[in-house]
Amino acid sequence: MAKQVIKVPDLGGADQVDVIEIAVAAGDTVAEEDALIVVEGDKASMDVPAPVAGKILSISVKEGDKVSEGDVIGEIEVEGEGQSDDDSAEEPAEEKSEAPEEAASEPAEEPSKEASSAGGEEKEEELKVPDLGGADAVDVIEISVSAGDEVEEGDALIVVEGDKASMDVPSSASGTIVSISVKEGDKVSTGDVIGKIKTLSAGESGGGEAAPAKSKSAESKPADAPAPAAASEAEAPQEAPKRDPHLERDLTVSAEVYAGPAVRKLARELGVTLNKVKPTGPRNRVTKDDLHAYIKEQVKKAESGSVGVGGGIGIAPMPEIDFSQFGPVNVEPMSKIHKLTAANMSRNWLNVPHVTQFDDADITELEDFRKAMKAEAEKRGVKLTPVPFLLKAAAAALREVPSFNVSLHNDGEHIVKKDYVHIGMAVDTPKGLMVPVIRDVDKKGLYELAEEATAMAIAARDGKLKPRDMQGACFTISSLGAIGGTGFTPIVNAPEVGILGVSKLAIRPEWNGKEFEPRKMLPLALSYDHRAVNGGDAGRFLTYLAGVLADVRRLLL
Ligand code: CAO
Image (cartoon, rainbow, N blue to C red; front, side, top):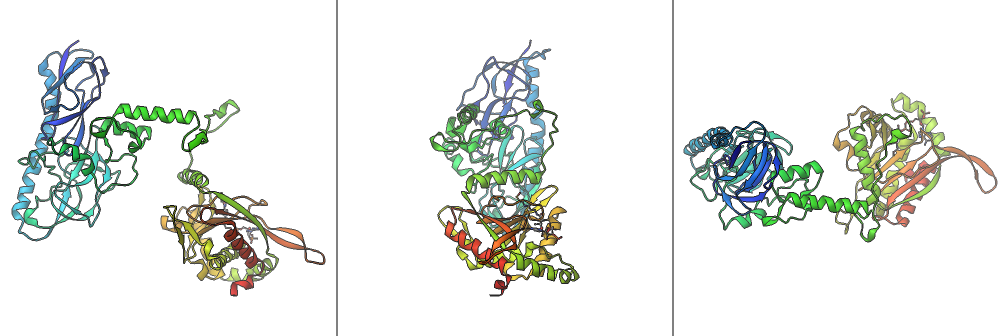
């Protein structure tokens, strides 16, 4: 077995970067490219990978040390046939360093060309991905700015992540972002245009290359790659908060969280939101151990059934069941819509305290009227089913009881009162449940609603609905009348206030004060969000709605 020294590879021009994590210890067996240590400079953190597969004999650096390209960080016993000596040991690092060095020399020239042509006027420049130190097609994991943002030269524009490193792509100039033409999930390579910037003063700008990633401690090397550039001692502790002032959203992998690429990758694989993990590494860095400790804690909680809710009354995890032990089964993948519906239903069911109130609307006269109008409707090319009447009646009830046309605000402290009446209509499609939204229902006539409802149902079944067609409803109607059933309790489509479940009409004997007479009764079930409205509002709403259905002349009032 041959020994080989392990050296720090090309750092894309950066120098004296911090060792922030030691990922292996003597005696560990590693595969080629496994992370050995994590280093971090001004603009990026990067794994130093094993040059070959083998057994770690020693690691000669510790957290907090500073290293540069070519520094020895340990020794490895090469697996299998030995390329024996230390000379060959240098090859991996050097081989890798060739391409990046060449690439790094290109951007150095371009900015100066641009700068010389700058005439002191405002101008628009392209923002490009700088030298990625040999990496290619790296993932855009975060967009840190948007059009209109003012940025300083060196501010992070996007964060990219390759196999071994994540890094900010900094702005090449100070100015106003005109556009960012990439999005999270895109892949970019050195030289790709990622957006445009209007420079405050072209004379000061460094030119079109987006990321000279100037090392703050090495101003003389503007062409250095964005890979770890050294932070001075004084700057280092401030780096984390400075890293992304724009980012406050909940991301699975957030650049605001301090973690090396290997930890980020592992977190992604495990589906862990990194900012939930308690960091114990230097400068609040999340380490692999932190991630493992977090997972252990979550598993323990799940097993004890105490996830999510205090006092030990949580949601017990679903047991894993092998159905094939009971008989033959065929396991098929769920459609995208089905999966989305399942997630939304769980979310709504668990978040919204539901109450369901029932009523029967006497639609005997409505049905007589509908049948009388059927021929005329057909001449106009529309099908007059009970659905347009239900839409019209619900709209009238939302107008009559405005305290019901509301949503609970995200902050849980406000009620959003709506002065519009958009109503969703649940449509059963082969791919799953879809809920297109008919806008301004209160302003439309029955024929118009019948036409729109039919068109929406067809679009839903043909998969032609656009996201906007399914947004903005105040309330939803779910009609299973054509299918059957005497009643069901629908789930509120939050943040809407409620949903009306309509079942199949039945002819029933109703007491008219003197005798029983056969009446066409339509079963209605109103589920509502009891955080947003109380039973009084819901009761008034449903009673008014049933009253309108019983006497459609009330729609004229
Ligand atoms: N009682 C009795 N008959 C009814 C009825 C009711 N409540 N509602 C409709 N019908 C009748 C219609 O009048 C029509 O009969 P005719 O052809 O004789 O006039 C027939 O049933 C078929 O109606 P339709 O389905 O063509 O049209 P619709 O307007 O009733 O419904 C739509 C349209 C899109 C709501 C419906 O097709 C649909 O997809 N419903 C399912 C909604 C759903 O899945 N909800 C559950 C959500 S939670 O999982």
